[in-house]
Length: 271
Length: 282
Image 1 (cartoon, chains in turn blue, orange):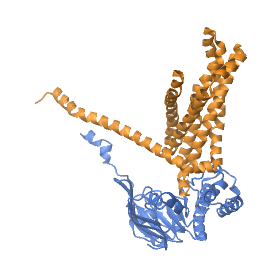
Image 2 (image 1 turned 180 degrees about the horizontal axis):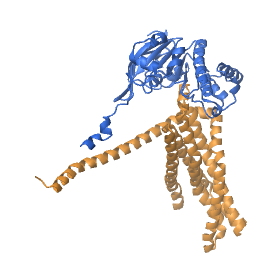
Image 3 (image 1 turned 90 degrees about the vertical axis):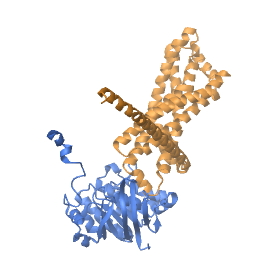
Image 4 (image 1 turned 120 degrees about the vertical axis):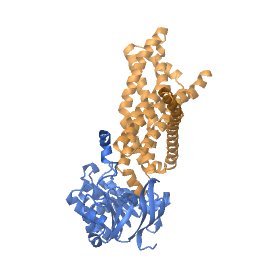
């Protein structure tokens, strides 16, 4: 494993219990400075993979190496030291509802630095300017739209200039304008900070536009990976189903169930 | 071939041990789950105490919680204290005047409040008003991923969110109980002296002569501190352990009020037995 990769995962498995494995033998490598997408349908294990990378979950087997540190058994101060070099954008922003927009963005700076208030003030306004919300710094989270809340959370995630930014479903429940704005911001901020970004999402079109490399997951496994161009032309049936949004295919439309006739008690009627 | 009634009996006999073992199994599981949760709550308490440095060093975090748990509970505490004192004044006078000792009304009101009603009723009100609010707030922070976001920002939520709320509650509770008792004594004075006409000098002087600082007031303060620790511990733990759903937060809030109230009553009995029996024997 080399330092050219921000995230390296080798033969990783994870399950909340032995009967239901969520991740099965996952291996991937994410080069530094790139925007990497992890795509797959809901419940395929992609958010779990993101949580293992963030050190929130411990894998059952395999190795997860993040920014040169193995996170498998990391805990306490060592894990927090690693997380100071990471930023994470949660699905719905997870802004602190009892703080203003300004205080939300200032939170990591106040917690982890001894910078004077004047400098924190300037840094927060610079981060908010980067996401276009300097004018909203006095608002409370309840006064923001979904897209604005996501942008504030993004400003908070980059407050300490992280080397790795994790995005958990950043496009969920956004209008098309906010959707495009967030997608452009992810790309721009990654390039200007020189960071590595990992996006977990199931929004194919926008992801294909901004990522450098893409992993497709199904049932806890990596089933395909490559550049966006390669994925658009891939023959893999799962990738085709996912990219075209087809209802049925390798991923069945129906959840596994007993026989339809038995459920409708047709057998009893015949009997 | 055995008759059907015998067949049923034999099945029942065969099933009986199974049913009993299933029942025992379920009972065992329930007890084990509760013991496990109690163990988790104890570890949580220890971890919280160990990580209270931030709450005490950055005292403005705790001050904010004293405002939310204490200052915002003032109205209900003061109004309840006044009415409880007024009722004590009426009921106490009714009983004492039968024995011609209505001047002892001040002692009855003060001792009832300082020893017992102040800490207990203030504790029950505190659990309903502030304890439920603490659980709901922490539970909702968990449900909306604010706790997870804090952890991902390398900030320990137990040190930053839980410990200040705990210390805010522990500091607020004795102050609220003292205010409850003071307001109750004032209520007793209003009814006893101003309304019924008990002698004002006797009311205050007998109270002053009979209420002991160590035996009565200090013991009442110790009770209110213990109730404050119990209620706030239960409140922060239930919030932190809540299922991150609307139903989970709702159940946790209910559990806080029920468990805290029962804990206050049980602890009150134990503390009263420890504190006052020896005093009476002497």
